Length: 218
View 1: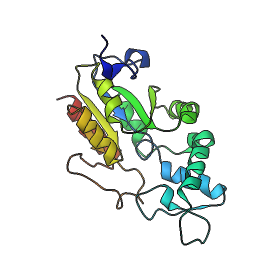
View 2: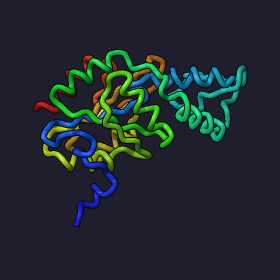
View 3: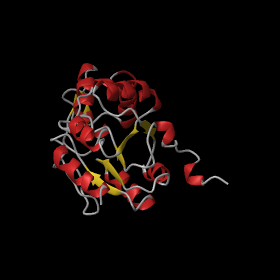
């Protein structure tokens, strides 16, 4: 009987990745790409304000001059519209492309993004346009289960990078042998983002690449 962990997880070989190399799994939004900036630009074009005054998403969307944020349901509609039409227009995080190119000399790179299904085409094209790896999985919910299924396919060391502690904690719980790192790309978010001693927080990609390389070459 097949391992149940792997039943809904793509095979590394199907993604063009070798189980004989270390594996680095990386988020997109606020890790490889400046999502908050891009989403804010999109909202401005729709007639809204995006105020980065808390580590949140929908609670930062306002009608111009309003004291209260937009209702969550309306924010979600704008979020879905962004991913359907504009998620391919965000800027890469400074240093991210060079860092992944460096890591890719010794490891397989897999992009694991929590984004709605309509984002797949634009997100894949965005990765290709910026010279980033093409191995992409769109996920929903905590990232621990899918990460566990992926690393179960290789005996090699693995690392995982995300901006959100719930995803990092999920990976630590489901795939404890994976080295976890937190990265927050937007400088406005950095002082607002929760951190944990459980996951090294490294917001400079050159430094982060060195730390990841040390972890996967141990």
